[in-house]
Image (cartoon, rainbow, N blue to C red; front, side):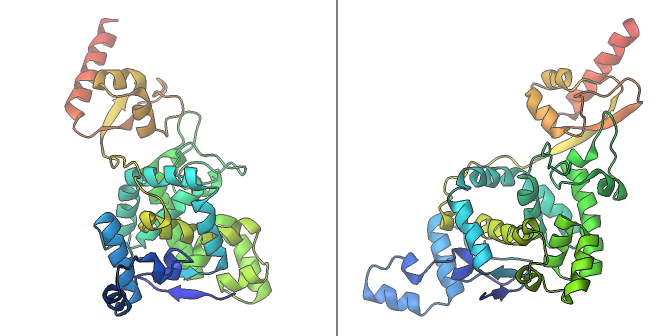
Length: 325
């Protein structure tokens, strides 16, 4: 298996971007243009093509080691064909959630491209549940979530919260990095569990992810996991080049936090704030019942940026109503 590797902050060459992208992908109109194109580096050719299509030229920067091989190429092809519809949806959702994810990773000193794990884990869905009962954007199982500070009870599941689960994932990924060193092994252990990966590394005497794949030492899901992430981030950084044009952008997730007393109903608050009930529930997806139970003192919730004053008035009115009752 022929493998090409690029390392952090390097721009990808054409085989990484499209697998089969050739110089013919850059239209030439005459011999002079051909000669000019041939004098450019591969990086410059790709930046020229991207700039022509999107008026941007800074997409080809990666802060994770990037490998292109047959497995990665096959997933690129899959996302361009059979998986095109849901991948387009992922690209749209990424405009909403990636700023938050990458900001938190950057603050923690971790590669921001790790955010693409969320794309593969859940498609950015807070309600995603796996066959192993892993939940939320980062797909935490309950025990691992608890180990990294995520609460779970009858009315609250913080694994579903994009910010809280991201902070927990950062702590978890940092621990895995400290043990395994390689980001590919970090991703593999995140997928299959660190205990299983330890055993296979010891059994086969190698800590090279691709060698473990070649030896059949990893579950099929884990063999596909890293190639999926690499394929996703390659496409996401230059979607036009892969046929994903006119992606519907969403507003980046922005919010304020307010203390909500016991009994707060998210639907009533949403109506008062003149936003959709779905938007309010999505913003507070950790609340399993859609309200804060009367048995608890209260809970911090998210509201749209700029609505703090109106929300305070809502709670003031609610308190007056309760007092009259």
